[in-house]
Image (cartoon, rainbow, N blue to C red):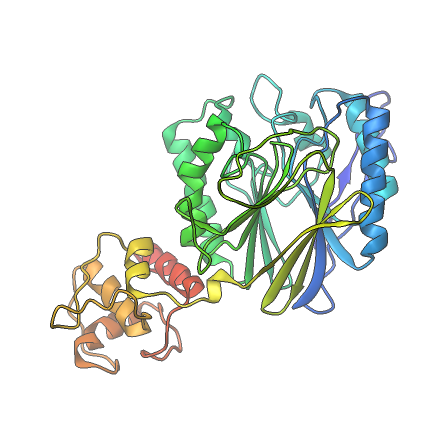
Length: 410
C-alpha cells in the first residue's frame, strides 16, 4: 500500500529534513469498528511558537484519551501563510511530537493557496496524499477507504476564483465527485472541505460550493461533511436542500482546533454552536452506527451526534425520481394514486431507466409483474441489477450505483 506520509522539505539545505508525520494506513482489525480524529483550522494568531504549542497540547490530549485512533483528518488553514517555510517547519515539528506516526489526511484552505496560480503549491510539495483525484487536481481532490468508511477530500477554495476555472472545468470536478460517491461501496461516506457548504457568516465561496456540491452530496448518500474556515464550532441540523431533514439529511460539522475565534455566527440551521473554544472531533464507527463527539482542549465534551447511514435507507418512488431521474415519466398505480411515498422496488427502478432509454424492445424478462418484464430484461442484460430480486427495495447507495452503471452503458 502506498505510504500516505506527510513530510517537511528542508529549505535551508540540499537534503530533505528528518521531520516526518504519518505512516502507512494499515487496514483495521475490525472493518466495522474503529475511530478517527478530525481537526479543524489551526492558523497563527499570536506566534507560530505559541499557537502551535497550544495546538500540540490539544492534539496530544486527543490521542492520549483515544489511543485507538486509526488516522486523522484535517480541514485546512494549517498555517497563516502558505508561502512561509518557517511556519510549515513549526507545524510539522509540533505535529510530529503530538501525532507521531498517526496517518494524517488534510485538505487545503485559503491560507495554503496564497500563490499567484491559486494552487496550494507548497502544500502540494510538502504532503504525499492519495493521487486518485481528477487530472490537474491531484492531491487537491482525493479519496480513500478505511474499513466501512469512504473519505472524500475536496479543495473548496477553487470557488474563490483564484484558479480562474471555467464552467467546463468545474463541471468535470462535479462529475468526478459524483462518480466517486456513486461508486463507493463503503457503508459510510464522509467528506472534508475547508469552505463550509452552509456558511455561518456570509461567504461567496461557500455559496458557490453549496450550489454545486450540496445536491451531489444529497443525491449520492453522503452522511457527514466536516468543514472549517469560519472559526466556531457548529453542528448543523441534518439538511436537504437547505431545510431540516431528520429522515434523510446530510450532517455538517464545523471544527476549529486553533486559537482564532469568531464570537458570532448564524445559528438558524444549527443544532449546536460553541464560541471561543478550540476543539477536536472523535468519530467512532460501530457497524450501522456512527457517533461524533466534540471536545475542548482539556477533554471536556462539547457536543455529541449519532448518525445512521444514509446510503442504506430505502428510497421512495418520489425521491428516486426527484434525485436521480427528474425528467422521468412517473406513472401512477391507477385511480389517481401515484405512490410517491412508497418504497421503490428494483423492477420499478428498472422500468424508469428503461423508459429513459426509449423503451427498447426486449425478449421479455423475469420480473414479478408483466408490465416490468421488458424493462427487467433490458436492465439485466446490462448488469444493472446483478443477482437482485425484482421485488427487493432499492437503497440510496444502490440507486447511485445503478444510475452510474446505466450512464456508463449509454
